[in-house]
Image (cartoon, helix red, strand yellow):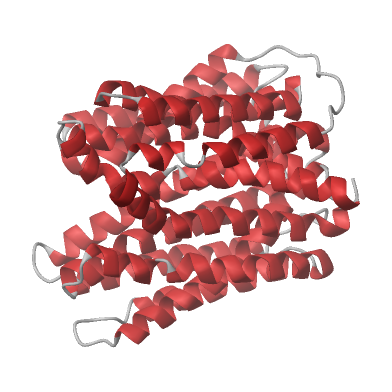
Length: 451
């Protein structure tokens, strides 16, 4: 695919994926307090609008990746567009919290359909010499959505009311849907095969249980029977899923993918990257608000620094990976990310705020250098017939990495600080995140001679 047709496809696919990213955690977290008063509910119930979206999107993305390989990327992607836009409209028009939580769960299903197919579409219809650049531009739009989310959603909610956080993007989403559905080629005919319902069910419930225990552990208590029971159930079901896949002649997730050291190492380093990224999202506001007495809006401006730096660097990194290969840019990016986290680990009560900004910029540059070549390595390590399920693996790595990064950061601060000043706990948590990033840098250097 060349010229104007390629860019129309890219604009449409990434336009609606941008909105799905914008509609995930950051905007909802910023308007949860508004919901508690406007819908006459408590903060715990309102927070389920966030949890429902996360569980649906993370639990189903691998399932939809497999479906895309069987039925075709275009079919599953089109379904994602329609479900997501419908959920946005339903959520904006909902009049009670129960209906709104259901609408957010439907939005998570739509996001899972999109996240399972968008990277595969961009990868499949980009020339191999441009794959890194195109994936880098895609990641740029994703991170730009994350950067704009908190500030823009809060502004819309304050000026026009919370329903418009969901209603305002619908015209853009519809335009992107029309563009992309018209531009995405029909592709090869559906591949024959049976859908592994038992494996899909075990995976969906298992991943949802693990993420639910992580998401609710703080309120339930990390050692409570509820948290431990849900976590153990989830892990057991994931083991059951692996055993089911090993016995299937046509498995949902082909475990032979992980025989490729390039694929396994790149997926592992992506997960470690998101652990570090979500640690920053937790630790920087904690340090600035609880440690330095800032207001949430001021802290949010600081937090935007990292994704903006990542946004600037990601396309450049994609171009470099097309010319130099994926291993060196990925490893250099994670090493740079490690340096930024170690800079943040040094901040204390008397630190200049410029030190915080410098650490965030270095970390953002490192993440930007890493993400494009890493995604290119993962998507380029398999044939086009399996890129749907691989897109699901990428999105699952992101969801699990973010969830465990939140746990790592929160547990370290709670254990080390013990109710006292947060500085020591924040420092230790940043060091642990830096260790994850350093491990990701080493993993990025692994190659099986084919990737």
